[in-house]
Length: 435
Image 1: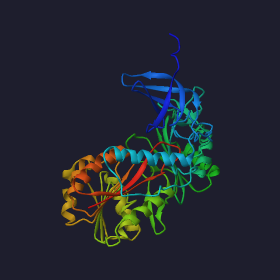
Image 2: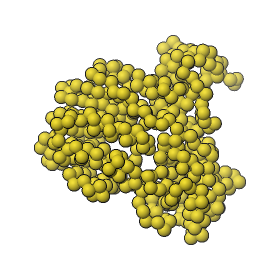
Image 3: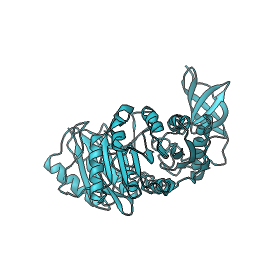
Image 4: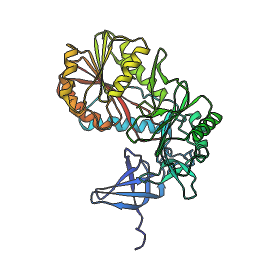
């Protein structure tokens, strides 16, 4: 069979993964590397009944916002998908996507918030790296190619924190000192405010000589104290294996620090996380000094700053380990007006315990995962709260969930995007609803 013929069309949208969307006779074509406003030629790589996936072969007329990607791994590494679009235009496009999602269901914000923007490079303080051994026994460290299990080995990453980038370059040679029998499945790199951490998931524990060698090598290349964490079981927690005892922490405000461990969820973009918290606190009514509920609270990223503004904050989280961490963070920051509870946030009935603690609610904050919070939206809508702040990492689920609030008499007061992941197509947003 010969190669499929080239097709051409105009691109008028972007998918959530950064591929351009065009149509021919009503059928959608998802074209890797194409931008809205461009006429392009492409070849189909995967044909389905209602849509087709394709690879760009030629730009017939380029977008005025197309730019040369700065990273040599762009398009091979699955990390960034939008480096070929000017950064300012990425933000504008995300804002438009968010507003279009809202308008499609008749949601019109009274006010559009200024987009929250931070540094476009070296912003990631946490990354998960894929690892495998090549045929010659040497370790390859990098990210998966888009839509593939193949690893693209990388020696440098432009969006990674600079001190983690230095570690990334040295990792393969450090790992090559390990025994031939050991398998490394994944490595997490984290830059806390007080130290770096390298957390490794492997097929066995390290022998003493290997441990000494790895710890010594890490501290030679790293720009600050580096901790080594290890786990052998897929589902277990990482344990610290060097002889240090200090924990890891990062600041969310100048007077609040959060302790955490590798493997626990943290917001990877420090600059935007701080701006997000400032914006959240600014949106809260000044007279709100009553009770705030923080759903999907994690280890207290939003709950603890809210506790400075409210008489009582109740944080709700599905993972017991994160509730333990949140309680510990409240104690270490001398915050005593918080209460954290474990509840299944895929089941509204589990929120009965919250209703028992709080007779009246002044604010509900939600920061759910990509699939949103559909199960508990009826409870939120009936809560009687004055204000609801919904922080979203997937606009279509936020817009779907907002329907419960609109039907319950809430209005969309404010809506805006946050550039949490520059050079990717992820759209993060914050919405304020008021009765």
